[in-house]
Image (cartoon, rainbow, N blue to C red):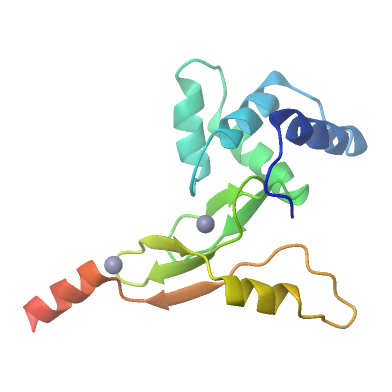
Length: 152
Ligand SMILES: [Zn+2]
Ligand SMILES: [Zn+2]
């Protein structure tokens, strides 16, 4: 996984994928990709839609549909943190990181750990090539812990 990718590289990856899948290369799809490229952190289809709709004619259905394609061509990663909404993040330009998920408020904190990263990346699995990984650690965040303590 490369850390630095220019928008042109990302765009040509997506173009190649759309050509292979015989998809129409619409301005909407590129606008969605560009919006994601400039986005930091976790997002969902609604959030990207809200950002785009301000000055672009796009439907939420198109955003959902494009997300599916972006996931298939590995430009975004889908997360299921345990909340109701599926969240995504860029699979490019983001440092490899893990997630602390609060089971009370569903808040997510990212953390990096060099030892963990090396342990996973140097591990070889038989008949399996790693493309990416994501580790979720579930628990209670400090804010929720305070609340629980004050109730008791
Ligand atoms: Zn919490
Ligand atoms: Zn993340």
